[in-house]
Length: 291
Image (cartoon, rainbow, N blue to C red; front, side, top):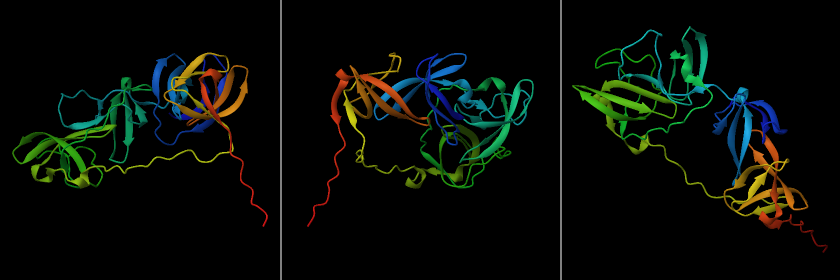
């Protein structure tokens, strides 16, 4: 996303949340429907999932298919070594030709620029996972276009990188480095490729669970599979499991609840009271006794 602007549960319909602020970090959304002006996306909060409409103009432009980053836009024979941008890669357009954009790419791994066809930039893409490889590349290794050839026009950042071995030729090995948004293929000296050590792997800390802190609000517990509705009464989502959400009000056969839909903020939804399993009122604070 580029901007957290207006959010809609129905199209056309009223605005349910509005932030009007730029998004400084990568924030990906699952798209279930496209229209000329809107994307319908899945948003979640506390075990509840809803469908909402986001204006296309709020969505950042990304690479939509894997593409080779070209040093110039002239046709080139197909070859394995190169710099490839993967779906979801964020680029800045620096210049335009009739059929290509000259783009700049920066992330924690490298910084480079080159040409890509205009057709590969858009707003909807299928993300690809990074590959966990079994070999380790020595820090500050250069990836070459051929055994003993010229280096690729950008270098990996310093540090240990995991690579996959593709082929060996004499004293050189063709390797591939892959992250979520980048794929590098190049030749390196075989002596710089080793079996991966524990230093090469990302170690994930075990995170403990956290319960909900004490609150002055009233919460309701919804049954798993409870349907969620917009203010107009249209179905917009459901709970994925038994879920606790803040209660705004109860009237007739419906309860009004609040979701926190990041990065927009609070939005109101409604649920049938028959799907409310329990109501949790705030506990009164204990008052100190007089001596």
